[in-house]
Amino acid sequence: MKERNKTASFAIWAGGQAARMVLLLLLVSMVSFVLLSVSPLDPLQTNVGQAALGSMSPEQIERLRTYWGVDVPPVRRYTLWLIDLLKGDMGVSLLYRRPVTEVIAGKLSNSLGLLLTAWFFSGLAGFFLGILAGKRRGGLADRLITGYSLIAASTPAFWAAMMLLMVFSVYLKWFPIGLSVPIGASVGEVTLFDRIHHAVLPAVALSLTGISSIALHTREKMIEIMESDYVLFSRARGEGEMEIVLRHGLRNILLPAMTLQFSSASEIIGGSVLVEQVFSYPGLGQAAVTAGLGGDAPLLLGITMITALIVFAGNLTANVLYGWIDPRIREGALRR
Amino acid sequence: MDTSGKVILEVRKLSVAFEQYGRGLKRKVIHAVEDLSLTVSEREIVAVVGSSGSGKSLLAHAIMGILPYNAAMNGELLFEGRMLDGELLRQVRGKELVLVPQSVSYLDPLMKAGRQVTKGRKDEESRKRCRDILSRYGLDKEAEGKYPFQLSGGMTRRILISTAVIEQPRLVIADEPTPGLHPEAARRVMEHFKEIAKGGAGVLLITHDLELALLTADRVVVLYGGRAIEEAQAAAFSDESQLKHPYTKALCRSMPQNWDPSGDRLCVSGEILAYMRKEYGR
Image 1 (cartoon, one colour):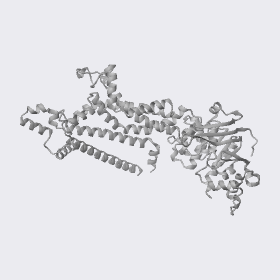
Image 2: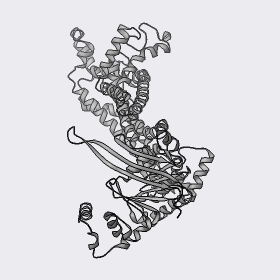
Image 3: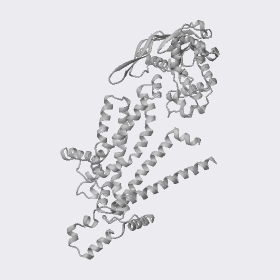
Image 4: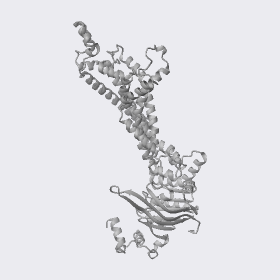
């Protein structure tokens, strides 16, 4: 009986989350579509060019207008897209002339490594810097780390990317200037080292600014812990400072840090749009810019939905982890 | 009770002062504890009684060496005849010299109670000892695996006492061990401290509850505004004439069993009256 109740309440919870997800995706796609359809850019002029258009026959222009769907009212276009989506068809990218799913899969696999590395390293580094700073508030380490975090937090990711590019690619020539593989190399020639070599700077640019929020939050929490009654009591019980940090500090800080990190997926993805642009890195972020400027509605909608899905998954993971790991929530829920 | 045992703790002219920034850059020194002296011998329970703000908890924190960074301490502390300096403190703190703190907030909220009693140790011997001690206090194996938020007030209290007893201490400092407990549970907790004293350790009981202190302690030190205004045998409180200070006399009279319904007898001196007015608004 109890087991059945648990299953039932889980089903209700999962259903609620799924409904939220569907609603979110619907709204995100609508907003992106509205923004794209009110964009002053004419897809024909942008993608074909004024000069080329001038030399075309009216029939050719008419065919292009049909291809870009210029004459179909926006509401009808959106509805057609939505009906196709429900059938499992995300459409064909107007710019790449390939199915949207295929384009996104390719771009995402380029970006994913970048995003994951930046996400992982900024989280890890921010976590340890935050602990270091919070452990001795007002100490040298604290002042350096807080100072860095505040500067990094107020630095736009694209500016950091340009600075890295100037210093490490242009002056020092340690890293390539852009792209994800060497110019002119065929697919067979590209090694894993090449790929990593090209991804280092973009990943660093993304991490540098991502560190600050997690570092500052962890520091704040660490200060709170170090001033807590239970740390005072640990001192009175003769536990060393290192023991206190490892036994009580980490334990109490890990949860909020993890939650924050999972819900920060949106920041990394947002940053990647700009950073990929600076490094001409052919990832999802750059594809989003191209699709947006080129009026490629199916591709843009596809990309916004995928990124929304990733961000949603991040937030959901944060929620689930919290309930699963924190005994105050887990055991509290079991008792009910 | 035997009070002629060896002196375990001696506090000589202890002062604790805080430096605070008042309005603007004006610095203000607050003397929280002043010129306080007391001793605790083995097998003895000494109660320090005072209202809130009288410096009781600071006394405990000063002895344990966990005063906040902006506090300055003066005077001498002797533990078993040796100067209780940083070196000795590192040796005895958490072993021979233990603190029983006030409330559940002194337990790590994400650590199971049993692990906190053993100070994180997981070896078989520590765990067995922990189980023995917990069962002595009527706590079962289930309590061991509970998180602090799942413990009742009385269970928390017994867990906190267990953290002290597992170390085989010479001196136990109990900082307000009974708030939030109903009288019956509070008396049971006091019995635990009596057992500890019977076992040979000294107990310094810090409380605002004079009635409970008299029930348990051999000697009572009355604290007011950071100063020890009177030190007396617990028995003296049954006969007011054995007490010297008017404040103590007033305190004594304020206990239910000594209460005079007319209430006139409280107004012995203007000082006490003024104090009572300030404190209780009448």
